[in-house]
Length: 227
Image 1 (cartoon, helix red, strand yellow):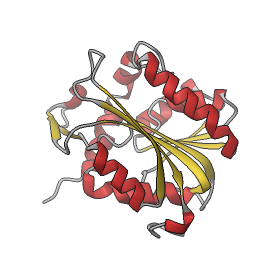
Image 2 (cartoon, rainbow, N blue to C red):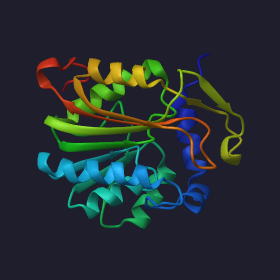
Image 3 (cartoon, helix red, strand yellow):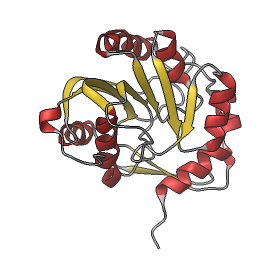
């Protein structure tokens, strides 16, 4: 029987939420991100205000990217598949709104947001589910809306993490190639704006880090998950 990667990720994220906030915190910081990472994200967020003021922190964890978005004037909503993460995000950022939801099944109407940030949200998403998730993110973005996707890059290999984070649950992480993510975004109705890659620089990094920004192009929408 095929193991459901989503359920595994949900169990691991929920069970490890307390340890996650101890290690990573509830706000972006130069202890976890590099200064270049923070500058790239901040530059994207500032430019995105020209498209509107409604933002989605997709795969929010403890609300780290959501906090930055809100501090730059966005009406921000965060979603995560793990109840434990959402509970912590609610506690740490009581002025924001966080919801338990899947990236490929969002509880929002079409064109709800002008900006989406996926800050390391797809590292547990199998390759065959990426387009469905991107199609759903395209659906909830306005025409001309923008997205930033950050991820641990590779050549499409998977990394097994037995007893992930001490949760007694095995987890698989996916090192999507940059070309694959570019193609998936394009097929989901996005035009690529920028691609940035850097080598691993922090102690907790063991692969290149990639950052892709893109804009919705309604005339090429693939029609996935439309409702």
